[in-house]
Every structure is written in C-alpha cells, then in structure tokens.
Amino acid sequence: MKVIDRKKEILKLSQGEYVAVESIESKYLQCPLVTSIWVYGNGFESFLVAVVVPGRKVSALEDWAAEDHLTDDYKSLCQNLKARNYILDELNITASRV
Image (cartoon, rainbow, N blue to C red; front, top):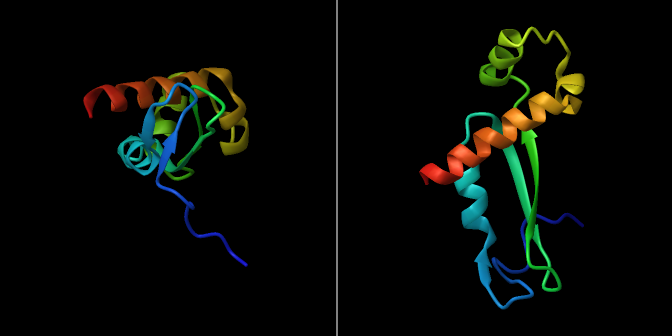
C-alpha cells in the first residue's frame, strides 16, 4: 500500500478556520531553496506545521553558504542554525510576495 495524497484537501483548525493546505504548499514551493514541502494540520491545534526539504543541487543555498564561508556538506548545512534561519527568511519573503 502506498499513500499518494491526502484524504482531505481542506483542514479545519481548532479555532474553526478552514485552510487549503495544498494551496499553501504550492505557494511555498515557489521559493527557490525548496524542492519539497509537506504541510500538516490538526483539528485540535490552532496552527500548521511544515516539513521543508531544501534542494540538494540548488545553487542559491550553496551560494549563500559560500558567502558566509560555510564549507559544510549538505547534511551539516541542513543542521546549521544560520542556514535554517536563512531558509526560513526566504520562505517568509516568498509568503509575503504571494
């Protein structure tokens, strides 16, 4: 058995707000650093959670790391707090543009 999609496309959060998760994912995929994103919501919580996978071969992240003199490999770069903050900032910029 293989799961290929969600059971529902619209989630209801604890405060009663309906959210189209697929729409949020497609907007955040416009960020040049992201190759994959998965957004999760729970009816008992008032917020969403996202799992973001930065691109391994995306030059924007590598260029940023080179500018900050970080010579870490991909795995170490993903665990680097400065790199995480950079990706989060880029996601926020993407969200504000869309």
